[in-house]
Length: 335
Image 1: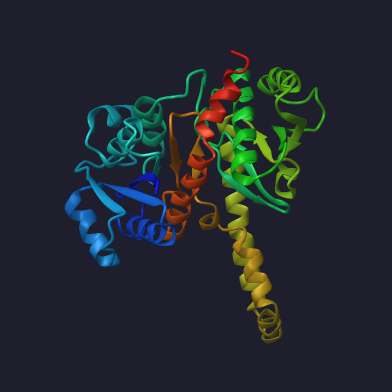
Image 2: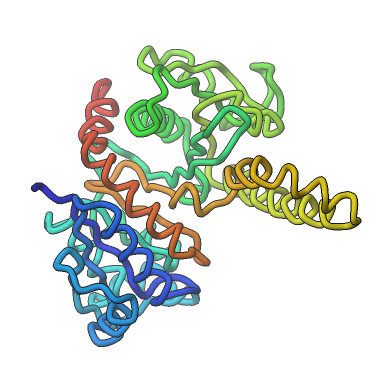
């Protein structure tokens, strides 16, 4: 059997190493075509594997005694800590040992390391972070949400192409609708970046560009791919997560506030649980960093074992569908 080899940063995130290792074990147990390489101090990681009760041969440890923390300067940390769990995992992708790398660690270090260690696909100018966000009609890809705050029009055009490839081949959306995040639907609105990018996207024959999309229309599933630079994308994503969290808490509070509401809650419990489940980050895994030689997935810093498991599972389809190759073809068509 040909395995999908995934390096996982065992020491990244608030819940490391426990939740990370448990998520890796769950992924290995549920998917017999995955082999996982846990990076971190060998003794620490082995102790967590023993706690999880895993004794199979599809999880191995890559000793990485150093750890990069969130308060370190990303570039310096990547250059100085060659034996960190992040750098060792990225090197495994670069040398072909692994197809993908998953980390809940320092976002800055993962982003910098992805480009410096794994390297960009030829022709790719910038590598965006692209999380899936839930909508009324399913899921939408937000690209970019945090990697490039000073993007140029040519970068956004490439983001659109990469996003379209991802949605079509990973999510199965045929001819995905691509929109640019804007403050209005009219073509003449927006800042200079949006105004300069709009006609370029209009003239891309290989994407289904439908125009501007306002932030309020994103939750309704107006488009399949939302293109933006990282500052606006991150604000949209964090607002989305914050409002979603508040609504979930308020719904739960409301249905348990009175005796009558508690009775009603029992009647709708299963349907409500199914609906609310759709809006939890655990269900969607992490945000892929597109445009690299291989796959890098950044999960939330507070990722649970379920999110880690789903982030690892993302890597299977990415390899099977040859996403890096398809992105390369799409980007280099016009170069």
